[in-house]
Image (cartoon, rainbow, N blue to C red; front, side, top):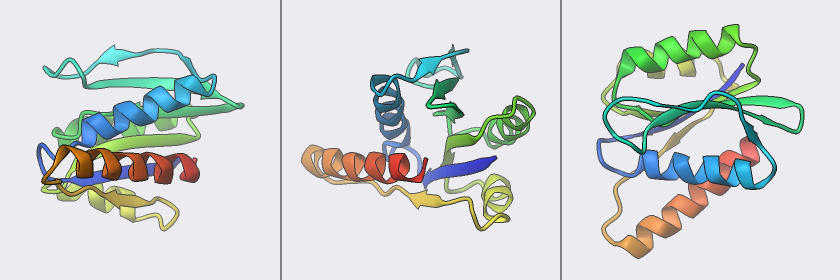
Length: 133
């Protein structure tokens, strides 16, 4: 399973960006199979999307290292082709796990000072992630 990790500090927009990725996948005809809210933020969720013969798992909640690790194992067992996840940059274990395979890209998200620059950054990262799928 290929893992795409969006890595950054708290409150830099990782969840927002991955929600945009999810919306884009659905607009391309992706079908949600098991969406469920994760944690206390109503914008955080996990799901597996069927798209073009692939199973694409996503976890937007990147502030719980053990949840990320659990999802890696769970989505691997469910034969997902790709797993897209957020991860807080202070968590070493999930980063090590993902970076142990050179085919797993880690994309760095940094805080932006303005709404316009954040929107631009989000759009660039969404495009980058969709290109990696």
